[in-house]
Image 1: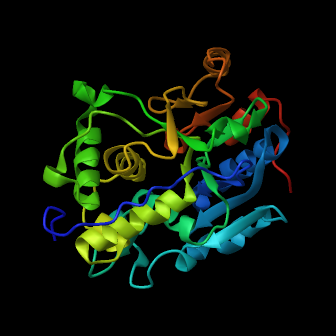
Image 2: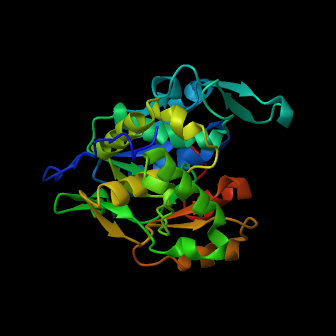
Length: 311
């Protein structure tokens, strides 16, 4: 279906309550368990203003991650979030080292695709007003108040203006185009703004309205629509929904990144790690060491002044 012929309601989110309730959301998997444990420890030590922390995992990882569960932290099975027709298997093409999610309604999906779907889906199950997304390979080093994500009844939408015009952002432009297609934006116009970062916030009511919009435009479940294109970004979909369809209603923009991330390259030496931390901007309160780079979690603990993981 095409939005030019089928109008889809766009819901004005209105102002937040004066003191909104926030939750931190982390999607993770077994190989990142120790990194996620470190995130939990540093989050509990440094972060204020979050009523709850949701960790979203595949069903087979539930038992492992429930070690981290407490009165303010829940481990959520993806089977509670995503349609039952999406099934996870060991992938023989990777000699069973990787997982693949298969269905008759989507393209074959990898773990990083499904983690994005979980982050969208938690909005229909959580009760908090604001969802703050933080990857499991993040560690907080400084005090941080979640109230940084709202003001005057609006939530902070991370956006870097115009950066997709650069040649090194070809993949981001594809994600933006596919976001426009999922949302039914006429002509699938490509925005040049980037919405991708870690430690960002969304309004829960806006996420649910976004999913309803996708289903109204296409007449199918939103997971089916998004999963029909393997090159997508949940951050792009949410950002374009807010800016292209809501005209920014219920949000204000910020381009400063609260987390300094080592995205690519090799594992840092001790000296390089200390230089990386020393170069954090004043507003940055956390660091992210991409897990696929292979930085040893024990070294990270030692370098940020924590003992070895709890038994």
